[in-house]
Length: 121
Image (cartoon, rainbow, N blue to C red):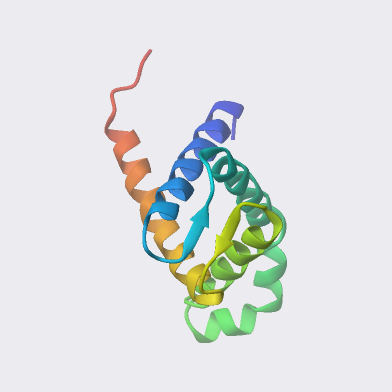
């Protein structure tokens, strides 16, 4: 992944986090700057902690046909909220669960919108 793709992914996730903060799902982020920090922390946790979580929860992942990934995503989402000041979960694990699912949907929509834009060459 080159630096431009990484920057685009960070920006899309930042916008997704900011949109999440405006939805009534219990995710509070103070400013867009905090959303950018939250996206960076979430991305780092996904890169560093997710493989460890997947290793230890492999039996649960197999038994649920991968649906346990939602719980892992919620845990990483909650950990990011715990680490970033200005990023709060109003209803605890329920907000983390809703936020993680909504983040996936919003990211998908934004990437779909980006793919329809004409590329500049």
